[in-house]
Amino acid sequence: MADTAQEIKTIPSVRIANEVIAVIAGIAASEVDGVAAMSGGLTGGITEMLGKKAASRGVKLEVKDNRVSLDLYVVVQYGAKIPEVASRIQDRVKEQVELMTGLTVSDVNIHVQGVSFASTEDNSSGNPASSES
Image (tube, rainbow, N blue to C red; front, side, top):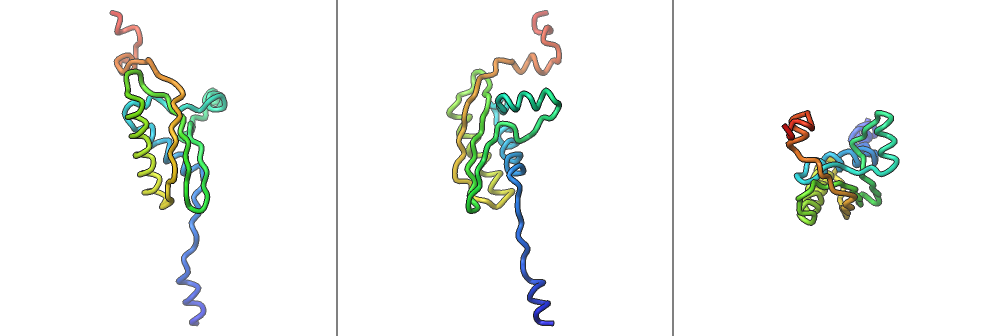
């Protein structure tokens, strides 16, 4: 019976899929003020046309020896200070990925793919022509 008790005490390993890490990073980055969208590139656009919008859009990652290196592709809002937004994204993504996965984040590289000129007033009213009345 001693052998059986020893087997029960062993802790099973937990594996986290790369897609899960990418979703955590994508959501964390999207929540930062100044981020208009995550940029998925050509394949992301095709995926959205097919009706499959993924939360991992705009995130590429590499996991090696429990260390994660992330590349995030973002579109910032017009008027936002890009260096400040990028720094906040790095801090938020690192914090959330480490907190939720227990992995160590070694790099968070931000790639600004564009600037969104859509105003929040036009988006909140639901009618783009309403601001001209």
